[in-house]
Amino acid sequence: MKNTLYGVIAAGLLCASVPSPAFAASDYPNRPIHLLVGFAAGGPTDIIARVLAKDMSAVLGQSIYVENKPGASSMIATREIKGAAPDGYSLLFTSLGLNVNPILLGVQAGYNPKIDFVPVSNAATLPLVAVTAYDSPLKSMQDLIKKAQSHPDAVTFASSGNGGSGHLAGELLAAQAKTKMVHVAFRGNAPALMEVMAGRVDFMFYPIIGLAENVAAKRVKILAVGTATRMPRFPDSPTMSEVGFPRFEETAPWVGLLAPAKTPPAVVSRLNDAMVKALAKPEVKAQLEKLGAVIVGDSPQEFTIYLKRDYERWADLIKAAHIKAE
Image 1 (cartoon, rainbow, N blue to C red):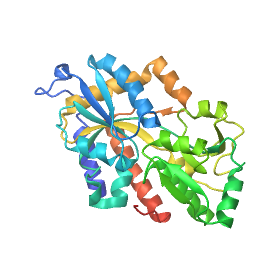
Image 2 (cartoon, helix red, strand yellow):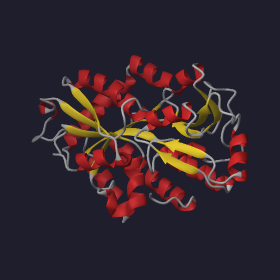
Image 3 (cartoon, one colour):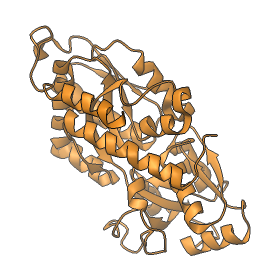
Image 4 (cartoon, helix red, strand yellow):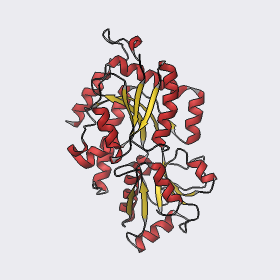
């Protein structure tokens, strides 16, 4: 059933590049667009949404207003867009919680990611980096694991919310290290990082975007990076694989744009064209790459296929790491 549902979505998007007579691309948009972000202002998803909204507005000739509506691991915003009119004027800029929340909660999530939305484009992926406060007594990932194994439940880790990328990465680390750590959920990565920098939470897996500034300012220090190879920006920081914990590159969250189900293909195509053009602008590319984002900018069809694989990847990881909804 899972493959069939995604197949239906993919098939329906094959004509997305051809404007329909009833809803020509020239008719859209003729009024401002509402872009909802289910995370706090200042976090990675919010930052990228605002960068793209500005340049997509220029391409579309209409303003795109970004609104933050954090809470319930982004489900509040997701449910709102699910119920919005499928006319292209209410959109969702979201991340992996789109798939993870229903895996953890089932029907209680309040939406079905396979049928309630139309993928527009995957904007970028954000590698995760394990960080702690700059003056933390934990000097390395080995120090952290040693403390956790010696004193189960003594180590705390922050995240943007239950089921978020940081939560899943932290639970995966605890499972691989065969120990227990205490998860502390916040409404977004920005407030979570603030608590880590203040030393009130031991560490977190933070999406790389915006991290270099905090490292340079000596607010945080890197314990390890969640990429297959070392990051050129942080060449002295080991990968999670190097310190004995493989597969963390798979925890890198994506950030992308979706519309409510039944949004006309011509509108989806117009939005995709605007995002791809915005991502191709040298100033946008430079800004996002400086923040550490890996730009994607794919088609609706490609994003649909990616989301199918993403769902399966997280379902397997959640099962293997014995992650439960809180």
